[in-house]
Image (cartoon, rainbow, N blue to C red; front, side, top):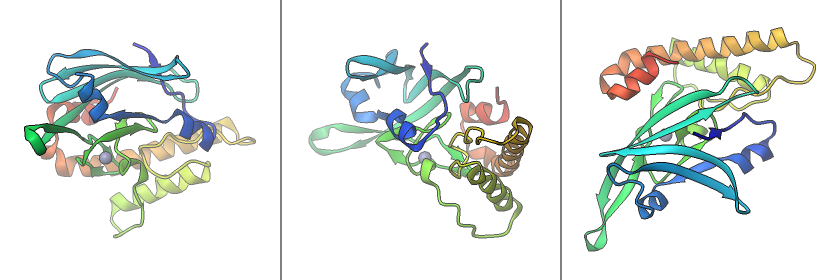
Length: 214
Ligand SMILES: [Zn+2]
């Protein structure tokens, strides 16, 4: 399976390297039919720039790929994405992804035509643009606000879907690693609160993904 993603060093790079999956293009290519499998390839000027493996199992489009951040180890990811269909004119059925995002304590589940990769998973644009205005003072929100403050202080963007920014110039490696751990810890705290509360709403794969992380 081809590799995918390598963090980001600037906004421009992020914009250029942002991959998206379009449910209609996959549909036209026959990739959403049960039993279909293969690779989805992104190219630029006839050269392949990235690919992910996929397999369609009834109404789930399951992605297989590897990610790496900041020259770390490659991490294998299996991401099942539920599909849904709505009937439209002339008896045709129109496919949609159900966004599998559980980002910053919110289960998304939006019906969308496109998913993007700006971090570890393919999620909808809402998941990558969640607004963090705090509504209440509970522990969950406190943890997310603390994580987001650390994320932006490092030059990154708020939200657990994004990669944590690379180490700023002049910062000690040890300081940087400590901040990263703290971000992870805060987001884990927020997520476990959410997952415990809504575990009954998750599918088997989602549960495995969040209760049994690699
Ligand atoms: Zn989403």
